[in-house]
Image (tube, rainbow, N blue to C red; front, side, top):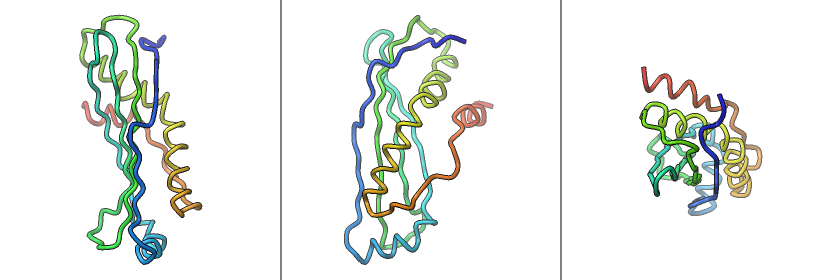
Length: 140
């Protein structure tokens, strides 16, 4: 299937890496395996056939530790639809799957660079996000 959209811009809208002090850094370094990757995708129509998609990735500790670091990136992608898409399911699939599959390699690389620069150079994400699988799971 040919793309029904074109990416006309993509940029980091917001980025945050917070580690309050050296004690927290040392604690997080020892406990980074407790951290998990969370993704949230929002979209809004800017004008006819132009949509802004915001993909937010957070890497955070789900436990109630006092000492924790916070890592987040909000990546904005502006797409132009090649045609009017009336079916909301088709539009959702473009925003939640097609666009994500296209931008995610760059987004993950950028986010890992932030984490590595924040003092966690050995960090990698072993599991790749399957956006098509997530979409099917959430829409079945």
